[in-house]
Image 1 (cartoon, rainbow, N blue to C red):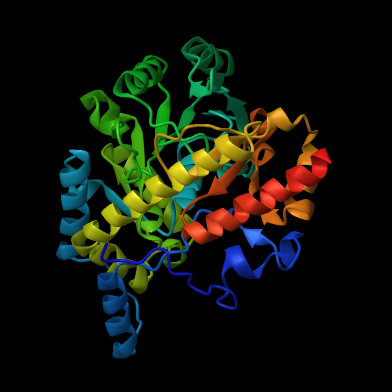
Image 2 (image 1 turned 180 degrees about the vertical axis):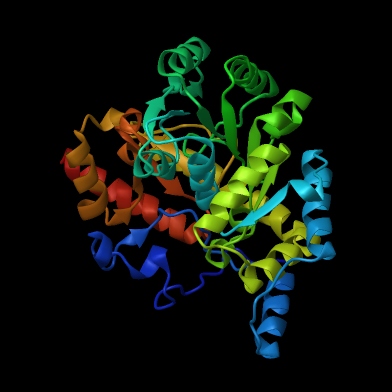
Length: 393
């Protein structure tokens, strides 16, 4: 490999949310963090070089994207997702969650029902509830270690609650499903039938494991273009979350204009210049780095799977099809949720994301971030093993 992902990069005392704010969030100061969705890997060399050049320039005024920026983004989508995007579709925001909030505010009114599929990325429910909308969940099914969709319940929830907006997560965070073309079309056709708009969060689209394929929802049928807001970003793919940049694609001009107006109303305009530079760099020069990261993550996943099978068989891996966030079933330990949190935080000294954060359907599960050097993953699992052995003794 060109890049050394075994190298441990010191992230403490860098204003890192992951490493520097444990006590502020009620955790022990020295806890091992395996939670929030950023990587412990340095970005592609091309990104660092361009950001250093920007830093040396020394002027960071109001900035906008040019022709090269769109070409880089469009070429990435065409080359790796077989999706041809148009420049007029593009709305740039500081993040996907921000874009989701803008869509909720622009396309629904207070009291309107919005549908999500729990257990799912917790800001979905936060944005719905904080904007005084009605939260409806088409809870995912879980059978024989795999998650699926109850389509009958999906449609009935829409009808019964007069749902106006559906927030789709694909690849799904945290359960790791990469929805198939057939599943997505079933969802899409139901939404078309009942005039439901779709916000499709596809931020993890570049992390797909072998044997699976990401399908851009809006690209599956021409009719979906009229109802869909597609949310993408280089942030998860290339570890750029702190640079706050996302590319949102909206083909329907009426919807696009409504969302752009809402963005104007909250006072947001130009992007972060560092985000512009980094996005263009990653989409033009970052592919080798990404392929090496994906290979390393596959090995980390294999290590995690083997460790659980060999040493903690009562804890079950929910086999991911995408993302570097892995969903684990702890229910075999027979612990209540508060007992499980005590075991993980106070006994194992680990900071994971509790399953209940993602909805009540996540009780008994935990989300772990495996985008770290293998030695750190090994340390985390060994700490967990020791705590469980002590529990059994």
